[in-house]
Image 1 (cartoon, rainbow, N blue to C red):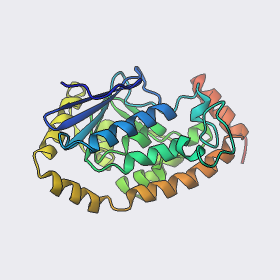
Image 2 (cartoon, rainbow, N blue to C red; image 1 turned 90 degrees about the horizontal axis):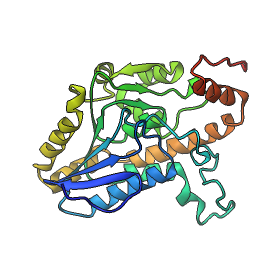
Image 3 (cartoon, rainbow, N blue to C red; image 1 turned 180 degrees about the vertical axis):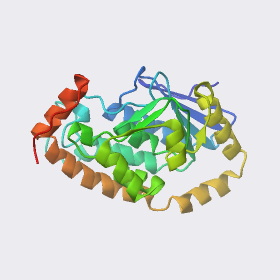
Image 4 (cartoon, rainbow, N blue to C red; image 1 turned 90 degrees about the vertical axis):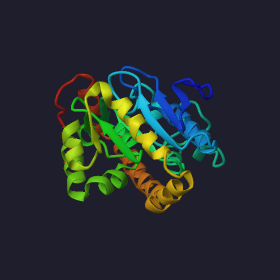
Length: 272
């Protein structure tokens, strides 16, 4: 399978009109600003070649993406800038913003199939909800665990998850931070295809190939209409999410939530 481009944390291949973008941060593939930028760059590059008609987003390791890298301040800083980055530069800061980079993923033109072979947690669920379709397995876990961290949902989930499964089910996920298995995710409409774990990637490629066999002009035009305004809705949602996340990041609840997560215990929230 021909390799496309050189990246630090992803591998990009193109074969039989299907591009494959694989996240290479096993076992849990935690994301940060750099990883989202790399994926966006890969998607945009594949958009520019007629040899690619559809894309599979997959990951190496146990998890699809278990969320933000909590050991890296870049993933958590309120303004989205990197540690040590100049502050107050209105020209450069928006380009370095995690959610600005995330919205780039939603602005690409070609259909994307997500291969969710393991956990998609927190912001990792936000990344998993970006593709048009999701192929998963019973062993996968889907969770918006933000409130368990004393935090607020992000990565546009207040938009994407709500549109996929409906407001009440999204509220249930947000308010409880409950985890759902792959078969439950399919039943809820959070994922689309359920296969054995060792077939997730091949099934995702099969679906992407089926899409690639159709008229590229017709598919892209249809997708543009079907997803019209989605990137703008995600952009508006992330702006609101970030404002609340920035406020909550400085609370005792957030400190306790992250500590409880690292210590693998139930958090003891005291605020009301």
